[in-house]
Image 1: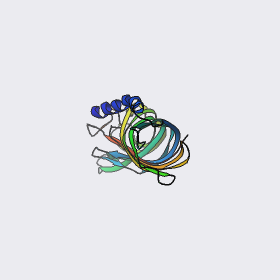
Image 2: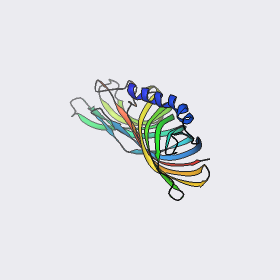
Image 3: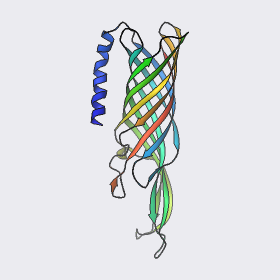
Image 4: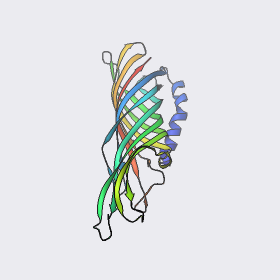
Length: 239
């Protein structure tokens, strides 16, 4: 993760120099991107449990690299809502001498981040009014909200036996969520040029999270690891 952060910082500091060395035009625009997110456990006993819809909204910025206009440092500032579900295997007995049972306790997370993507965008020459592109880089996200709906056991007064289960909704999960999220960004799409620098963007982006979503959460005597991935449909316009 430290290497990834160093690379991100180097790309960001290099952006102003990229523009100074070419004759291209800096572009700004806005993006709205619905996404579908899911959670990817890396701890035995934790299991992925479905997808969750979210969205990304914010400002896009591109700084050209080179004189031919086919490469750019693409960044921005976005509000990103993500989520997903997971289950934990819970072992319990109901009464003295009862048989041990296992129940999958479900948790559904709703997350919100301020995201800063740091990517390289590679574009074809204009074909008619169209340009096609591929995009590769990293994203740096900072968590500003974390809520959870989850199931938990109800114990008898002795605390040894499970007498039932209850569901809690919209509970604060901030202290159990890491502040920083880093991800690998892979995407592609096309732009339709209307006039001058005004262009419509449509693309698909996959973001693979590689920092642990959970902060100090133990499961089975080990530090639980859970990663958040998502796929988004990018819709934007450059002015």
